Image (tube, rainbow, N blue to C red; front, side, top):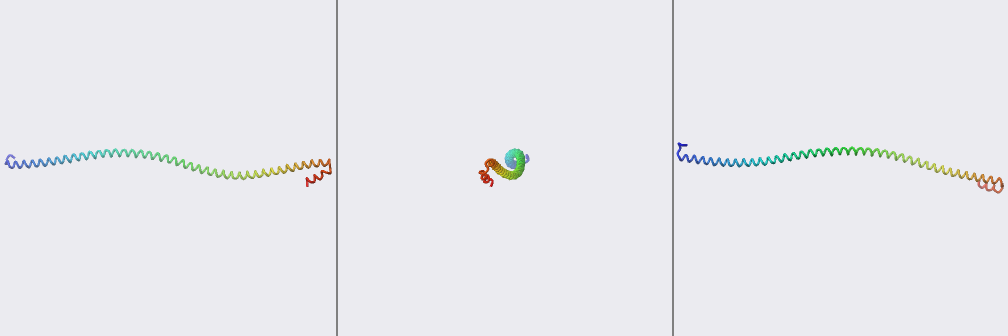
Length: 161
């Protein structure tokens, strides 16, 4: 620009100064935008880090929950097997008790019959004993009649008839 006049040089300097100011303003805006983006990236990075940590905690909780669920499922299965076995045992016991009840009823009938038989035997024995006693008394009377024939005959006939 050495060939230009001072007025042109001044214009050129003014233009360059405006250009410089405009570029400095753009640089300032770009720096501000860059700082804002860096702050945004930093915030998002921290949020991403926290999210990763939260995901890891949730995954750990999920694994623990699955282990607990598996343990509870195994316990449930064992208890269910026990319940089924106890139910089967109960059905067996009910069947056995039903059979025993039928046997007890049958034995009660047999026992009642035997008690009735015993009563009949006791009555028969009592009658036999009375018959023997009467026969013994009759023998005593007959023998006493042989020694005293007449007066006892009427007692003998009363006893026999």
